[in-house]
Image: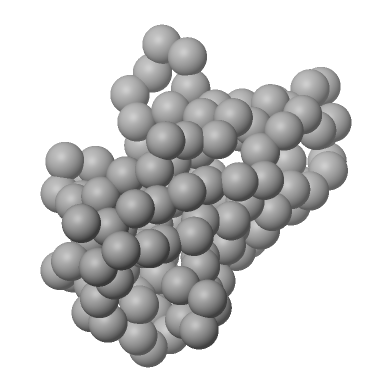
Length: 123
């Protein structure tokens, strides 16, 4: 089992920045990927960003490209999501996820999930 714990959410004004963290524990793995998804009220969970656990490959959904940056610290088993130039439409619960195989932007493909951290962006 893999346990994922997110932190760093909160309330921010539009244009501001937040950094989310996701600490992984338990049975971690050197292959696969870590990712961030978000779910706004009344909407389906959507892919935000992912990073391979080894190598340099990162992936982003179009609406956050250029504003969000995903990174990792393998020594700490932690993945980060730096969110800049926040917009009200970024308001959602953000979930960290882990997948044992190749990254996918389909939530159902991911194997492990955190409990989520809420991000609210005011206009």
